[in-house]
Image: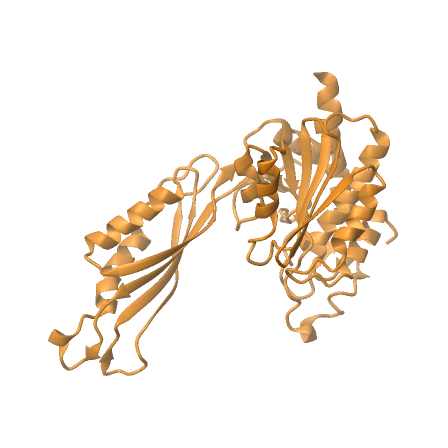
Length: 382
């Protein structure tokens, strides 16, 4: 299939950009953006390459955000073709990153080229925030770029993150928020000893069981119009020495909470500590703060994107906050409106990852009409 978005997607897939490598993807994008008048700023933090590109100096600042890194290919014997040699079969583009998210990056670039050509005197600014560390530890990627922008008081007003949000057809689902995520590593201390002398031991497994049961059964909140109730999930419990006649000295439990805007991480930490203390446990706990919840309510960005989807696909999109986290969690706290819109996610992180060519072509049109609504139509009507 000969279409600019397919050709660019293939060129990006060919670059083996496994986290945190960029493998030349950002320079390829930068070359296209420079030709449109963008100023390109490369920000390298430790092992991560980031790109901040901007055209214009005035508000509103519209941003495309995404990542060039991909997860490892996995078992190559399970792939029908080489994961970094893009192949089209039955109108599907195959290759690692086709859906997550090099197809979206290609659609962003082609849509931007079309928009700038049609509206050379558009209002506001267009920007790109691209990282090579979204699939990895997310330490030196988008969060570091946002810190840099915040330090110089450079703000994003409206942001489309190109994560694969769609389910059955491009644009059928838009993520207008994400739950918060906090993880805990809990160590409950006991006293090791021989099972035959229970008065000489303190069994952490026995001590932990009622506390962990209460944590798993606690109703943290009832959710709200945008979010389901907060979920607590134990992900691992391990203890013991491997011997059946030894009471272990400690138990470790790993857990995660996905929480709504009805809670914050400080409230969760306080409630967990209250439960553990009430059970009279001797414990240590290490917290990992993965991201705060955010929501983008109807407004300029969401209305513009929903209208663009209806214009291109003739369908009514569904708003959702389900799924995992994305880099939108670093952008939203700055006050930006943030949504996620990309192709179907059925094959992401799997072998034989693929995306429908027609979906990428439609995604170009959706991105284009979103830009028109935000930077041309709405401003001309004001």
